[in-house]
Image 1 (cartoon, each protein chain N blue to C red):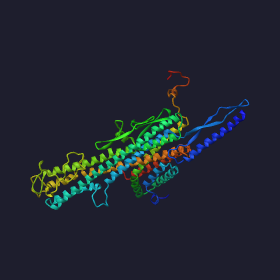
Image 2 (image 1 turned 90 degrees about the vertical axis):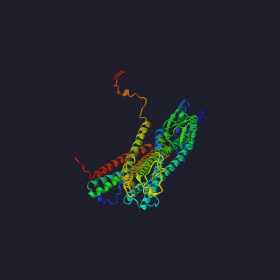
Image 3 (image 1 turned 60 degrees about the vertical axis):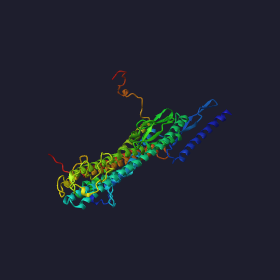
Image 4 (image 1 turned 180 degrees about the vertical axis):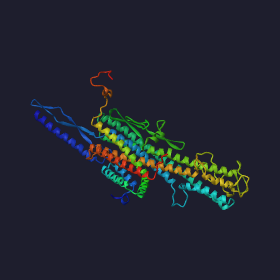
Length: 473
Length: 116
């Protein structure tokens, strides 16, 4: 009886093991489209041998669970690249909005920030026109009119930048609750995994944890550290702990000097998050770096034009024979008190065109010396060592180069994410490609692309040297 | 040989570079090999191209500078990914052995401790 039982046990064990393996295969197929699902392979454990008539027979195998085909190195590389791509993507969106602000709109009848370059030219040209006929009222009104257009476009641009900054601040603030929800889930999953499977792959629980990590990587820059008993600790890229074992450390936000700052406990991690990656990193880089940089350029432009023009106008004589003084200044623009804030508050203070001091101090009202001096400001290096038009032009070019650079980075990072997803899919998802095949594709693609790059580079170097003579001294 | 000027259907260099970046992103080795052949043909044509064609290609090259920079970055990141995959493959196949003292590799056979 024992013999039959043993034999039956051996056969039924094999059938059970096969059935369990089939269940795992079925599970793989059923979850083929589940995000983050990693293919499982059955684990087989050899059973104790059975003795039949004094002879030991192998008792077959028992299916003892499943192991997901995953690799943390690859998954972490993918998360890391995802952080970079999300960050540059969020930053790029913000930069495109800033750039659009300063792009001339030829179809628009109204003047906009995109017209600041031509506004500057028109403003100084209006003084050049006044030179020819310094007492002409229409030409004087034209000076004030072009000053108003310039000041309006500069202050509107500054106001738009402030609006964009506020919008980014709001978007950044909204990320906090998503991060906290994910870190809470990660801590809970850590506990479940450590309880259920401290020494082996925990299958679906690890899939869920990886999915949470991927989502978190899209939001902020993180580091993952594998801990004992199959746990994972999560920190920001600068080392601030967000998840440790089964505990999550909540991120909070608060307003300081009108902008949202982020904290873990009492530690302000705003600047760390800005450089860390993820969407939040992109929002904060645009809010704290790109917009302030653009605003600073506008402030420099507004401050220098306003103060230099006002100084010259106060040094001359207006149509009534009056010269400006501290008590009664003849300011064309509202006089800024500091560089910061000059752009947003740029406006025309003068209402009477007769107060334009076209004549030199003490000269007759028909004199045009001071009008000439003010027209000449256009060609003088009065804004950070550059002429006003060059300064604005360089600002626009620099902004364009920044947008282009971030666009390139984003293209490359997204490409890298796509490649890694392909590799990860081959290794851990349910498809027919095997890992070796995926690796081979990556390698051959890289080699072919290297060839293309080398040849394109040769072509470009060859044609771009065309017509350039090499002088030998 | 077909003259450069006769290649009316040839896309702008900018499009070619963009296509190369895209193909590399999706690891389309076949497409990249096709593009490599196109570049080879372009290179050959360039050798016999007239002044006008070279000037036109120079314009296209300047126009494609941004796309070329992006392609270089994609290539660079692909190399990074390839390195990760190589290392991963080595780890998976057990070829990398940790814990081995590197000094052992330098000690001549039969030498004892203290031999350098």
